[in-house]
Length: 173
Image (cartoon, rainbow, N blue to C red):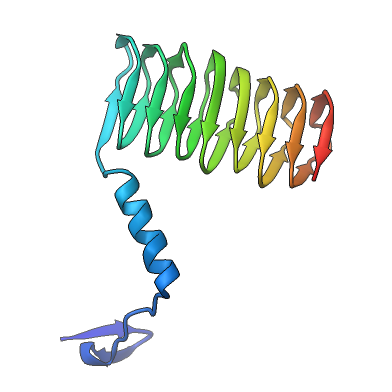
């Protein structure tokens, strides 16, 4: 049995696996070991009184009255009354007061229509909504024309579309 590609047949024996360097293999192993593929869901109309700690991913459509610590990614369309620590986070269509902070090893995406109060520490962040708090990013900060940031921004790279609003100090290092 062959693999079809652009009207040609390549025998399976001819297909070569991509070559990974030892560094790539170590990074892949670190990511795989960092969290599992489990997905926790806090459904709409559900309230959890207390924090959540998971090695997997988390989707929150309900209410969590406590802090979140997830080794995986977080999709937030509900409410969290506490800090969030995770790998990557997408915040979509909510208004929330995090009291403390959002800490992400990777990226943060605040979608249009979302409004947050709290500081954000991350590698990269994309803001399309409103953020009342400081941003400290080791990588890129992107603000679209619908973004409003009321706080200080510290980043390696800052990209701002015309129409975005920043009320605070900006440091690009």
